[in-house]
Length: 396
Length: 234
Image (cartoon, rainbow over all chains, first blue to last red; front, side, top):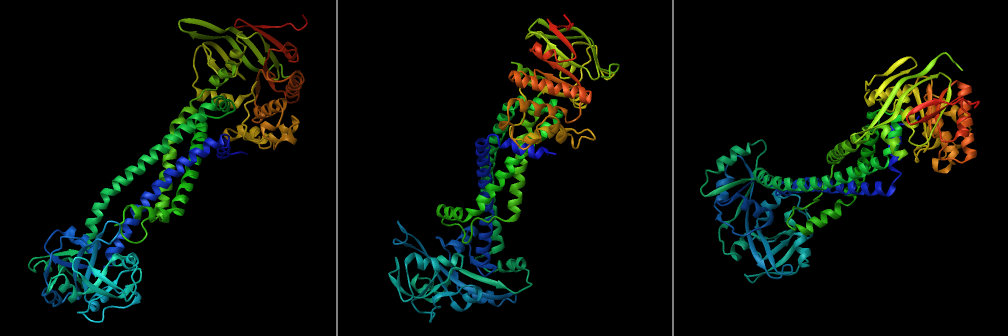
C-alpha cells in the first residue's frame, strides 16, 4: 500500500531543482523570522539582565527626565543633574532601606576614544557600599582603590581592552588633565560595568568640581518591603525623582514594543515572499501534471484526494524549509548577534539572539500555517480538474 | 461469457458540443447493449465520435440526452446531469481505464503505480491484487523498476494492472496500442483477450487498427457520431 504522503513526497522529487529552490526560499524566510523574533527575545532578556544586574531596585536622582536618567545609568550620558550628598543620610535612616550606594556620574569627551572620539563614562563610587550592591563584580587584575581620596581607577573589562590598559598604567581624564593610576581591571561581567571607569567618589567630586554632590543614590530595600509604597515615600524628599528599575524596564520595553512591530512587519514581508514562491511552485507543478491529475481521478481519486495530495506537497516543502531555516538560525545566531552588535553598538550586553523551544515551535507552526494557506489555491485548482479535460488534452 | 447479463445499455445517446452558435453532434443517437464478459472493439476515423462515446459509456462525461444503464442501474436519464463527484463514485466502482499514453507516475515504482488506485479507493478483497496482477501480466520481475526503466509495452501492461487492481466490472481501453509497435500491440491485445476469457472481464477497446480490432468478440464502427456493428464474415 502506498500512502498519499509517499506519493506527494515522490512528486516533489520530479523537479528536484525547483523543489530545492522553493525550499531555500522557505528556509531563508524561516531564518529571517526566527532570527528577528530571536533578536526580540534576546534584546529583551539582555536588557532585563542589564537592569537587574545594576544591583539596586531604586535610584534617587535630581529632578529631570526619567528616561534620560535611566539611560544615564545604563549607558552613561550627558545633561546630568546633581543633588546634595546629605540625601544619603535622609534615605539611609528609613527603616525599609537595607543598603545605599552613592554615585557621581561624569561624562567626558575623549578625543582618543574610537576613530573620531567618544564619550567616556566615569563613575565615582564608594568601593565598600558599591561592591555590596554589585557582588558579581570580580577582578581580572588588581583590586579596588586603597583610599577614598586617591587618584586611582578601576576599569571595566571592555574599557581596559579598548584602551589596552594594564594595572599600573596611568590614564588621563581629558578636559581635566588629571591622571589616574589603574589599580584594578574587572573581569567581563556582561553588563554596562564592562565599559565603565570607576574612580573614588571623593576624588571624582574634586576632579569634576562637584563637592558634596552626587548624581544618583542606588537603594536596595529590605526583603518583603513593598517597593511601590517606599517609592511614594521617597517622593516626599525635595527636588528628587525616584526611578524604579521595574519602571525603567517597563518604559524601555514600551519603546521596544514599537520596534517589535517593525521587526514583525519585516518578518511578515519575508513570509509573504516565501508564500508567493510556494504558490508559484505548486501551481506550476499542478499545471505540468494536468493530464496526470485528471487520470488520477479516473482511477478513483475524489476531488478531496487530489486536494489533499497537493496540500501535502506544499506542507512537505514548508516543513522541510522551516526545519532548515530554524536550523540555520540556530547555527548562525552567534554571527547574527555579532553583526547586530556591530550595527547597534549600544545594544544591551549578553547574547542578542535568543532562540528558545517556544520560539522554534511557534515559528514551525507559523510556517506550517503558511504552507496550509499557500497550498489552498493550487490544491483547490487541482481538485477541480476534470478527467475528461485531461483526456481531451491528450487527444489534442 | 455471461450473455444474458447486461453490463452497459445505452439508448439514443446523444452528445452535442457547441462551437459558438454551431452545434456539433459528436455522438448521434447511439443505442448499444454490451453484455457482461463481452470484448468489443470500436474503430473509426479521427473525429468519428468513438472517444466521445467511450467517455459517455465510461461516465467521464454527461450525454446531452439519452439513457444509460450500468448493470441495470440507471445512470443518465434524458439530459439529467451528474456532478463530477457522482461520476467519480460510479467510475471507481465499475470501471478501469487504459489510455494510449499510459500516465504512469515516473517517480513511483511499477508496484507503487499499480497500487496507486488503492490509495484513493479500495474494494474489499483487493489486498493482494497488485501482486497477482503483476504475476498474471508477466511483470512481477519488474515490480521495483521505475517506469523510465521499462519498455512501452511493459508500461502499458503496468497501466492495465493499475486499471484492474480494484477489480472493475468493465475495462475501457482507449487506443491502448497507439504508442506501441506491431509486436507490442499484439501482445497487449493478447493480454486483454486473456483477461476477458480468464476472468470474464467486459472490455471496450477503441482502436484505429482494424487487425487488432478483429481480436475482439464484437466489432463496431463509428461514422459521423453513429455506430454500426460490423459483420465480421463480410
